[in-house]
Image (cartoon, rainbow, N blue to C red; front, side):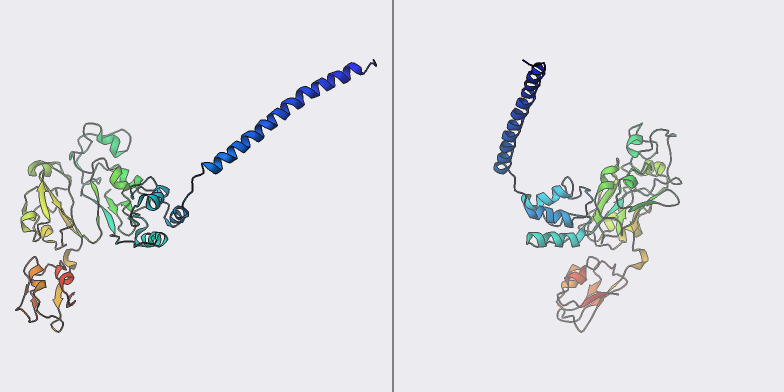
Amino acid sequence: MTPMTPFIILAASMTSQIVTPVIILGAMGLIFGLVLAFAAKVFTVTVDPRVEQIISVLPGANCGACGSAGCSGYADSVVNGGAPCNLCAPGGAAVAKAIAGIMGTEAGAVEKKVAVIHCSSGGRDNTKWKYAYKGIESCLSAASIAGGPNSCSWGCIGFNDCVKACMFGAISIDESGMRVIDPEKCTACGACVKACPRKLIELVPLKNSVHIKCSSQDKGPLARQSCGNEKPCLGCGICSRKCPVQAITIENNLARIDYAKCVNCGICATVCPSGAILDLLGGRRKKAEINGELCIGCTICAKSCPVEAISGEAKQAHKIDRDKCVGCEVCVGKCPKQAIKMT
């Protein structure tokens, strides 16, 4: 045996100890890899390519207005759950049409909506305070302490949770600290609705221009005492009695508008003794006018007019009393000959 023999034996032994585990680990890795490859092929979940196509046309806001957990969830619910193509509020009609094209269906009508704040107080200069709030500047936090710092326990607290929640910059603050919604920027995603702890914000059809700007359920004298701008709803019911289409009801000392019935006549705003009803059209409301050459005297318009502003004999051209006309446009939609226009 040479002097180097022990070292050769030791080296061979060490090589055997290293190589054997490596071979075993390699074999195990190969086996596991084959098993995983087989499992991936057997248990693979086929993703409908339309899901990715729909995701690509969605705005990516992930606002949840569609009722799903983000845009990918909505895309999956359209393809695999039968959800309508027109639920994406930020995308509007254009996105609904694109989704319908992918699905090979009709998009359906998309009614543009906008957020409305049912409170006309909340600014620095038109809110009465019960105490000086020094906590976290959040409406949710402030509302949890003694009912909130403002005297009206139904009104806007004013710490702008709605502003912070809006992803589209549609809510701003004016000079008096009031929150103002820009209808052009508002996508009706509903984020501000969820953020307001007092549920003062509602999504309403953009075509509606008359709104109750109060949410107080206090009785008249107490409501007037608590409201900073002294324009609370008194629950008097005058607006309800004067509404020609019975679109206003009084519930818990508060007037509420059924927007499905409202014809935007604005009569309620003119008779409200406290000024709690906002009429965006004001004096800019158009009046209906009948084209005598097109009118066939079918009387449909006269029967549908909520204020009886249209008169005329059957089979003769009708006329509209412009002093009575409130510009609701009901007759325009009812006329089968398109003989009525707004001027």
